[in-house]
Every structure is written in structure tokens, then in C-alpha cells.
Length: 157
Ligand code: CO
Image (cartoon, rainbow, N blue to C red; front, side):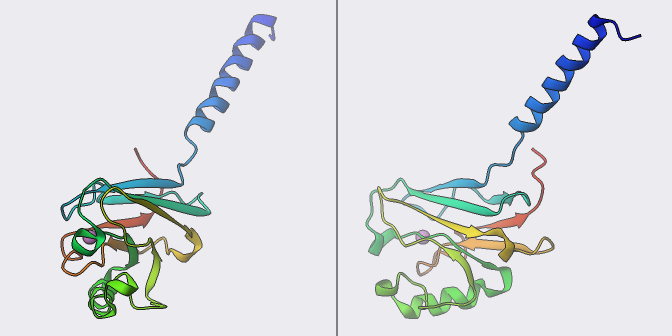
């Protein structure tokens, strides 16, 4: 029995489903804020597998310049962090504390000081779904505390 009334209900619930699916579309980027301290305000970043590219915007809300309290956002495999940070320290401020053409880095922003903002976009096909990556700041002394994790997975929240 397809009375016009029942048809109307079916159409309405159909439209509702489409709207919900659209609203839940993945957000392919995140803003990470920091300041004159050794802390990112995001410690766990989830990249939805449906994202082809992912954009990280880094905001430095502090006042200190980059040679004193510089911050960048560097992504690598967890096991590479210490070596990248050590080589970055040797590379110095003129190289923004990253070895030039550092192959172990998956993505990184430039180094910024207080009041500045920067961003980086990277292709998500560089990420393995089974791996948990680490993001950190390569400014000397920052990487041991100024870090978080990034993984490719469906966001449950
Ligand atoms: Co830093």
C-alpha cells in the first residue's frame, strides 16, 4: 500500500540521510596552536582515510622571536624523531633546524616566531594505515616535549 502519505515519509527520511552523510564529511586539515612555551594544543591528530591531502596550519600566539622560541611542525615515523632533531640542531637556525633535503621528514612547515602563522599540505598516500607517526618541533631542545601523534584512521568522534 503506497498511499501518498507513506511516500512522503519515505522521501523525507531519505533526504535526512543524505544531509547527515554530507555533514559528516571528513575535515582534511587541522589548526595547531602554540605559544611562548613548549606545547602544541593538539596532541593527537587523526587523518581521515578519505582525505587525499591534509593541511596543517601552525599558529604561534606568543611574543618571542623565532631565534629564541621558534616553532615548526615536523612529521616523521616515530623512530626517526631523535635523529632528525639531532641533525636539525647541527643544521642551525639558517636551515630552520632541519637538515636540508631531510628524506626522513614526511612533511614540515617553516619555522615561525611569535605572532606568525604558517601551513603545510601533504599527500596522505605517504601514510601507512598501520603506522602511528609523530609530529614535533625541531627547534633545539623542543622535540622531547613538544610532540604528538598522527595516524590515518576513521575519526570516531
Ligand atoms: Co618549538
